[in-house]
Length: 148
Image (cartoon, rainbow, N blue to C red; front, side, top):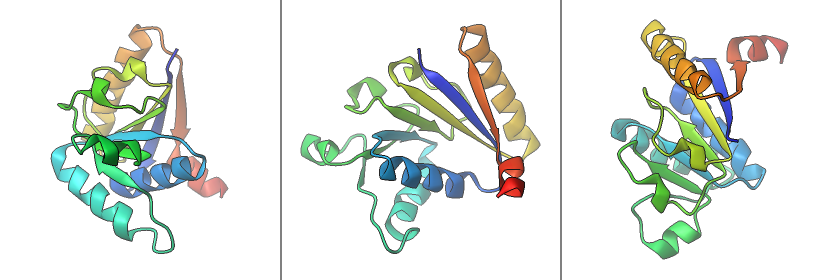
């Protein structure tokens, strides 16, 4: 069964997503990052410039098959057909709704900001997963930061 994790209290969802992708890449995971189109451009740029000493190979889900096969990180929107993705290890979501096809992934990470509207939408996603019988892991980034 797919593992579901919510990362709450992200001061900046894009920054946290970049950190998650970096950690996953270092661990050898193949990741699909799903976000609204306007955030995908920021994520794409961030993967080029955020980590100065390293490059995280990535591509858009609609890229040529030979590019996708060499890219451990794929960027997609919720409207893209995730079944077309060769990666089914980790799905990272910055979206407001549960992603169609999430069950094909070993793990789903939902990133939630400190904004009340975003937190309310996350509660609805949490309920949707729980109603389907998924156990959910909660990571409070504010607490994790204080512990560090």
